[in-house]
Image (cartoon, one colour):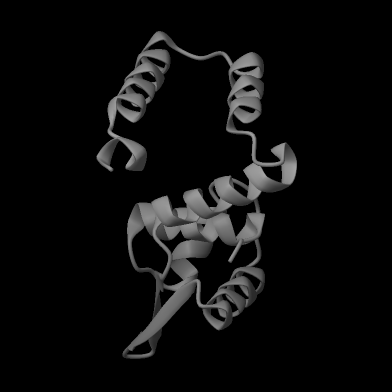
Length: 128
């Protein structure tokens, strides 16, 4: 399931800070931009209905937890973006990103390591 931009903002708060109340999430969101409490509440209720958040009760407070891990969400979004925007071409995606984004030497080294590891792994064909 693809979270909306507003839902991703909430997920980022929960991934960073762990389980929180609506008030705590709203306070954190307001550090970036002004967001009304009722807006945050409604978004989080919708997210719970979608299965993106879980909710537990502690006294009079409801504590929300991300039901979707950060890496899982990133993989889902990248897969969908790759298919819809680049018709499945990972090379076109990488070329666009590297061509438009100033990439640090450390990032390039990390990309090279990833590629080297990826292409040095035995494939299913090699195993047979």
